[in-house]
Amino acid sequence: MIPVRPAIAALLLALAALALRCWDFGNPVIHVDEQYYLLVGDRMLHGALPYVDIWDRKPIGLFLIYAAIRLLPVDGILAYQLVATGIAAATAWCVWRAARMIGAVPLGALAAGVAYLIWVSLLGGRGGQSPVFYNLLMAAAMLLVLQLPRLADRRAVGAIMASGAAACLLAGLAIQIKYTPAFEGAFFGLAHLWYLRRAGASLGLTALAALVWMTIGAAPSLFVIGFYQGLGERAFNAFWFANVTSIFLRPGYPIEQLLMRLLGIFAQLLPLIVAGAYGWRARAQGALAHETWLATLWIASALTGFAAIGTFFDHYALPLVAPLALLAAPTLGRGWRIAASALAIGLAILLVRGAIRPNDAPGAREVARLVALNSRGGCPYVFIGDTITYRLADSCLPTAYAFPNLLAYTTEQGATGIDEAAEVRRILRRRPPVILSSTRHLAIWNRASLAALRPVLAREYRVVFSTRRENYRTLVYLRRDLPLRH
Image (cartoon, rainbow, N blue to C red; front, side):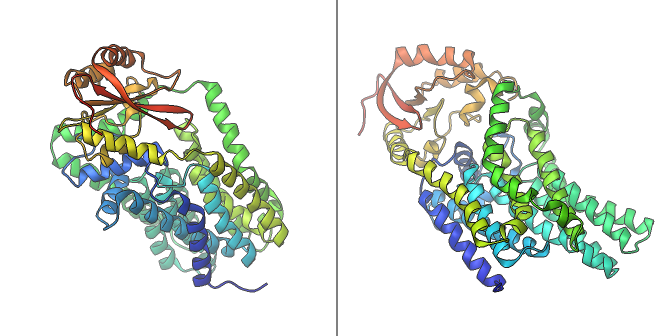
């Protein structure tokens, strides 16, 4: 088997990432979430304070990433997609390196890296979802964990201490992108403690290491808490409610929806699950048993984080892809046919989806163009639709709760800290020049918000533009007293 040097692997995986993701470059509507992340990051550069001036419950680190991306001398949409592609390629390289560390042959390791890129795109990570960014931190920390058996055999106590500090810092940074990596971070810390003892460290030193590592892991979050405390009670209360309290106030989804989502995720991940399970027992008892068990515990900790959210959208499974690809690597390396067959399954699904997926980008840009022309200095209102419209139209926001789901869906009702329907009525009293709605028929509409909107639209607004958006249509409403500008 011809060895693959790290630089060659990095180049091949970067090319694979580009080939898989370039079709979406410049598309402003890949996913509703990343539209909003870019909007928040952009408004932060103009002085908006997350949780106070623009509301969401994601940690501030995610918005800081998008704010930093907006500083690049490239269109913000293309910029975040290029950065996300580079991050995905770097994560795939970490999977490749980790696969070599658990005994995968070069073919299997490279196939695992490519598998990561394919399945991330399959599960809603074609753009800049939060796990696309923090998966890199988790995969880098796992590289440190996989060195622990060798370091313990050498009784390299100092090296394990340094490795534990680095792994916990990586986890701490990831927690400020999304909170669920805390479960993986806990595994990384416990693994380091276990091997620290195996290396001969005393109980006292092990306890000290645990305290130091926990402090390092908590440091990014403690810094953010301190920052908001320094801004005063109002800012801190808004931060705490959004990041902690509101998470536990969200209503659940119907059980049948959750089961169908879980089934869909399982079906998509099945090739990696089968490849990972094949021959696992033999590997777990072989020469690299410790490394195999560590990889297995990584997927267990990632699964815990996935289950903790409980809503089971496809993109919530993105943290599972790297550890599953890692465990699948030895099987993928058993021959070209096995590797090609496994990758072909994922690639075929991805290609079919791409072929049948409508191109909604031109319509979204036309909507934004009309909104920009007809807002006349006022704030348009996206009741339901693409929040990237605010960014593309360079318009003001009519509310701090600019993500449409917050005011329009029952899944957020009672979890925002406000009366959502009252906020809709407040926005409508200011008579937005343009309102975006859609033809969607959903069971989860916030009925009070919808009841506030519909009579106002019928009485004071008219539809001036309609465009396809997935399996429904986006509707642009213009106030009746305003002439349409083309």
